[in-house]
Image (cartoon, rainbow, N blue to C red; front, side):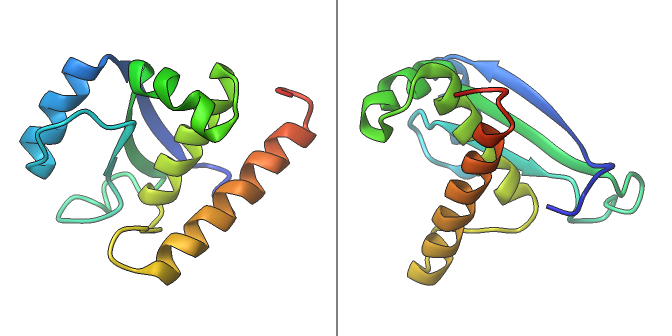
Length: 121
């Protein structure tokens, strides 16, 4: 991604916790798989230019989605991390078929790269 010094925080939660955050910050009263809170935007973005932001992942939702994505738990969580990081660096899939396609391709490419490292299968 060309961001060798980038940092982010990662929080794993359950569906109740992510639903509360989703309701509070996005006005969507339902659980979701990942929420991304970018820090490279807004008034204080220059304070820590290497800080991408915060990711919150629901392990319960990830486990439910594993079959749909044909991934084991580890790869599902990695995919959600990739998805969230892409949001933190500006990718968007809602509202545009082109954006959704670009994001899906980038996710697939990055997951493949991670698998090729041998860290995960």
